[in-house]
Every structure is written in structure tokens, then in C-alpha cells.
Image (cartoon, rainbow, N blue to C red):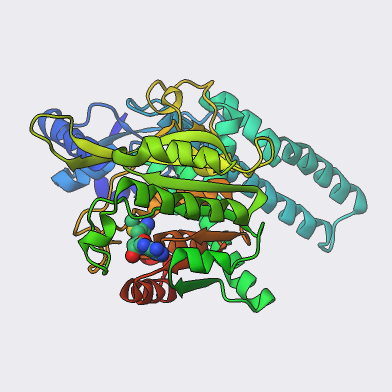
Length: 470
Ligand SMILES: C[S@@+](CC[C@H](N)C(=O)[O-])C[C@H]1O[C@@H](n2cnc3c(N)ncnc32)[C@H](O)[C@@H]1O
């Protein structure tokens, strides 16, 4: 070991391949060095640091001028590989960070391999070499390089870093498609499985946006329309078996003023249910053979709605409870913070169900970190926990009383329809169903009786920029 001026040392040009400590860890580490000094020498090759970047940075911050160093015992190894492997000795390194280190090694080996291949090609074309000498150097290089090809490099990295090849593959994909998310994982701020899902969702959304532009330009039909009128009149104008998905969040008959006065939403039970029976029947008529109707209602009429929907001939696949996370507090009864969603299909065997749209990482994966967990996640339960919109929520429109969260409609539409399908909402209100539909490249037909709401939702749909809400 020797002591050298800190000014003579440099970080290795590939140092960023190794995860840095996060801010708290770095602060703690610096405090320790301030108190006890650098007890483990920094490992160097020439003047470049290959192990001990945090010690070096902390010493620099503390104004320490002389630091202990030793020559890294490379034993013929490549300094970058040595640096990556040395990083695994670090405390607090998660399995996901290990996977990132393994990916760095895989990538480095692949890049080195490419460079050497290019050099071999250059040599082979060079002047003044005999054919025999060119052939023999090419053979030697080919042997070395074949060990470093991507698959081999992954297998080597997997063994060296003690992580599965699958997680290295995930890290590789993340690095190439979502480098910022990858850096979060490498820094230990995000889990690899969650970052991967986030990346897949972003890619899907991007594709859907492109598809929705295509749907409009290739067919010449507008992607969405809002008809202003009574739902029974407007539904009657639509051809049978043409709609893949209907989402209906009708008035609940609880005295909400939707522009026609609160009384209009306080019918007798008989009047209200007779009207609901009619629009439900119309909806059933419009569904394609593999279509589905999703109906939302509160506690007061949920039992009636269950029976009315049976009368339509549709088959209930699920009775979902939407837990709104907060609602109306009661003094001598349970707080009201949930609604019901009836999910019904026309054919018990033939229906659209995209599991991806309604899956989440399992507890096995996120809580118990069990390697056997399915990285694709598990399907949602039949209780959906999605916060309702508060007054100051970013997606909230100022002039509409009962706007649903987009997150809920994204799930319904993603689950029960494909891009290009027609989605209908006979009570479209602020147009939430429409926004979720066009985001997912579906066509949207909205029906809304109130002129102001119809206009408001048209403006919302026309000006919608998906990124603005996320
Ligand atoms: C509960 S709100 C729907 C809110 C909507 N899901 C949203 O997220 O904005 C019910 C809507 O149905 C509309 N409506 C009421 N009666 C109607 C009818 N007979 N025909 C069409 N729309 C009607 C109301 O004006 C109101 O906008």
C-alpha cells in the first residue's frame, strides 16, 4: 500500500457502469470517513480507480489530500470486468442491482467483442501480412470472440453475479428501451420487475397512440363522436351487433342535478327501474356476439340491477366492487365508499378478455421477493381499489359533478376490447370513457342528454393530449 495525492487519481472512463451509492448512503459513508479516515485502500490500475469510487469522492468532498492506494490484483483480467465484479462485494446491493451489474458486464463483453471483430476485419484487409499470419490471428480472435457472444456473455455474467439469465435479459431490455428507468433500478430506487412492467405499459401506450392515428387516417371515419340526445332515442339509431363494449354509468336516482333539476333524478322505483330495463335491453341488442356490457351502480339499486341484467339474457361474468378509498362518512352506519360494477357478456364462452390490462405484480413478487413469482403478475381481484377523483385532481373537469377516474375506464376498455373496436357509453357525461377509448385506439360513441356536458366532453376529447394527464 502507498499513499498518493488525491489529485493524481482519476475515475475509470467506464466507472458509470457501476451503481453509485444513493444520497443517504453516500452521506453516511462520508460521515464515517470524516470520523475514521479511509481504512481500505483505493484500488487502481495506473492512475485509474477500479474499486473505491465512493471513498475517492467522499475524500474529495472532505478535502482530504492524500489517500491510500494499492494496485488492483487483476491477474490478467480486464480492468472493467474487475471493476464490475468488485462492486458485488458491496453491502446493501439488491438482486436487481446485481442483475444490472451483470447486464453491464454482458454489454461490455459484447461491445469488446464487436470492436475486436472490427479490428480483425481491418487486419485481414491490411497490407504487408502473409495470408498464413492473417489466418492464424483471425482464428485466435474468432475463438476468443465466440466466448463473448451475447448468449455466452449472459451465461458468464449470470454465473459471476449469481443472478438468473432471465433477469439479465430483463435488465438488457430495460436498458435499451427505457434507459432512465434502468438507471433507477441500477441505483436501487426501483424494482426490476416493476420497472419492466412500467416500460411495457409505456411501449403499449405509444403503440396505441400510433394505432389511433392510423385508425382515423386509414378509414376516414372520426375516431369518436358524441351524440347529444336521450339515450333510448340515440341507441335505437345504432345497428344491432356492432359494438364490442358498452360501459354505462347511468344516473343513480339519488337527486343529482344533471341540468334537468334534481327531481329528474328522483323517480319512483317503478319508473326508474322500468327505464333502466329499457336501456339495458337496447345495450344488449347492440353488442357483438363476443361483446360485453359493464354497468356501474351504487348500493341502493345494485340488487335490482343484478336482476334486470339477467332479464336482458346477458351472462354475468363478475360482480366487481369498486372501492373508491374514501367516500361519505356516516355517524351510525358504515361509511359509503364503494360502488358496484356488473360485467356481463353475450356469450359465456366467446368474449374478449385481455388479462394484461387487469394484472398486477403479485405479493409473492413485491412483498416476498420470491424468485418463483410469475413476472407477468396476477389478475386483479374482484375488488378494485382506485381512488375517486377529488376536486383538485389533475384530470378533474371543473363543471361536471360525477366524473369517473380514467384509471378505472382504462382497465375496463383495455380488458374487454381491442384497438379498432367500437366502445359505447350511453351516459357519457364528461367523456371519461371516450378518453380512455381513444387513448387505446378504440372508436368511441358517446350519448349525452345535457347539451353543456356534451359540448364540454367534445372539447375534452378534441384537446386530449394523453401525456398531459400522466
Ligand atoms: C353518472 S353521469 C356519467 C358520468 C360519466 N361516467 C363520467 O365519468 O363523466 C350520468 C350522465 O348521464 C346523463 N344522462 C341522464 N339521463 C340521460 C338520458 N336519458 N340519456 C342520455 N344521457 C343521460 C347525465 O346528464 C349525466 O351526464
